[in-house]
Image (cartoon, rainbow, N blue to C red; front, side, top):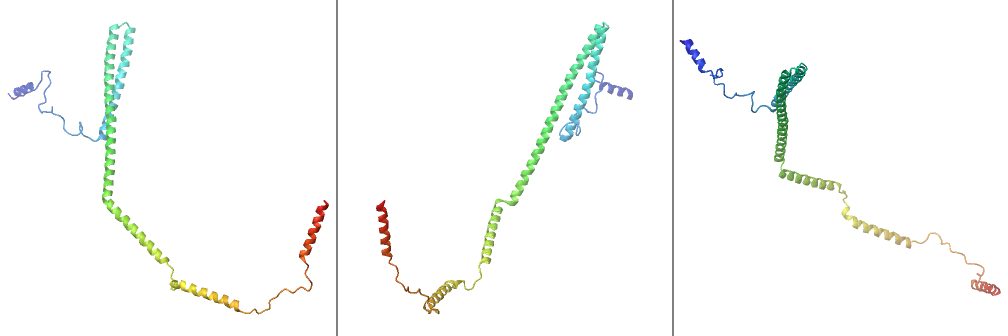
Length: 238
């Protein structure tokens, strides 16, 4: 019958532990998005931190269990229930092993977070450096050393031209500048003529000459000889 056939199929899909096998082929690896592979680094870091937080909560729960087992063991010993106290200590030991596992998992998760943050930072730094290099290449291609040299040549040429124009504008406008030497020679001739005419011109007033003395001038030589004799006489008296 149809019911018997269905039961037979169900029996065939049971494993020897009594669990049904998944006839839909769901044992294949999960596809896509949330599970594993290359997601957004920021989202992955958030998930890792959430996993760390979950482990910390579980750690707190296990620690409460350990404290409870210690309390229970003490109570059993107080009641002379050695077997019960020993059982409590065994459970405490199991919880402590679980605590060690949780701490190892936390360490692994924290290491992944640190490494992923470092890798993300390195990737961002690489992108920034690559962007800067590309920008520099673009500017260099747009400017170019040849263009710079040409521009500097143009600047120097324009500056020289501007200096020439300034010098030209500053030149004095004198129509007789070429005749200056001739004019100076003519001026010197005029000055010489003026001096000569002054020398030849008769004085308009008589020249005052000193008057001739009416008395005989003293004989200076005789006076000096007399003074010398007096001085010798005074020296001889000493």
